[in-house]
Image (cartoon, rainbow, N blue to C red; front, side, top):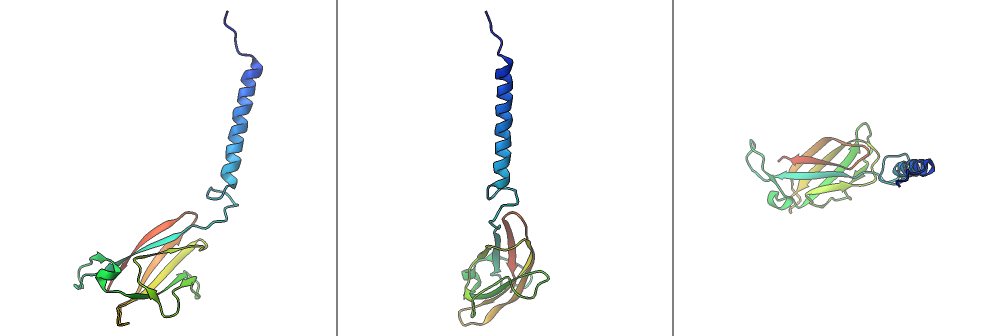
Length: 148
């Protein structure tokens, strides 16, 4: 003879499922990296630099520091509406890289200003400004064309 499950077992299964869902929701709202007010880690702002290694003023060819002849750079990252840079290259600049990863920035919109120098310290890439780099709750990546 077939036995029906008792109402206690059915109700117990429902309460177990509800408790599991409540626990999952509580963990989602409190663990770092999830949406919630206790998230203490900030997103990363990544900027890929595309150095123009084409000598023609009417064409753009995305290259690297080496292909464009850039040895050193001086840069500042400034939050829109503020005068003091949020981050900047060390005094005298630093070796050229094909991109930057900025950590620990508060949400907002930033402008990146870069000047590229060749191995003789001649500013071969006049100041280029990459504007509107917006970072909010998640990591963001942008492309910045470095024109000669």
